[in-house]
Length: 166
Image (cartoon, rainbow, N blue to C red; front, side, top):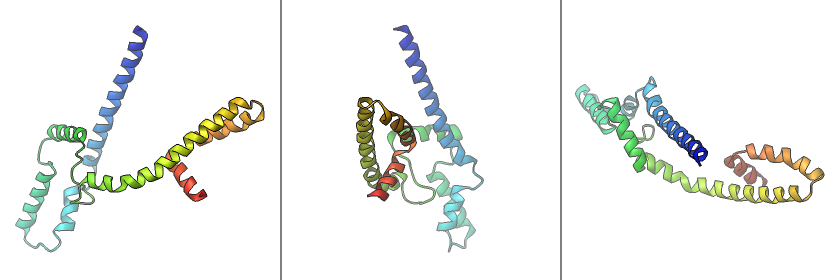
């Protein structure tokens, strides 16, 4: 029993370390980019504005709206809290759309592509695996490399293959 606890403890520890590392990368990398996302939004929204004071005020409002006026640790804590709540905020590239709206607009198409591919792949894999176990001579020697190849194809790739075949 002690070995199982140690094994699962290590697995859980690595899971959380990987999760923290992924959150850190997702938080830090956009902030290391040379371009400022607020300046990018300003270039699109303040095209007709001639007054520098108004432009500066707009810039400050956008910085405050995105929470970029706070220190990095506070920004990261807010990012983690909002991520666990499922609130991904405003999109930098498609401002003023929310990230949740962008993701939800494509989720039905994603499911429509993924679900049939997953079901067909599961059915074919189980049927061919049962046949390979039942017919042991040459069928298994052909099926093993084929199944190894097909297992490397991601579900979205299988969806594209199935769409082109049918």
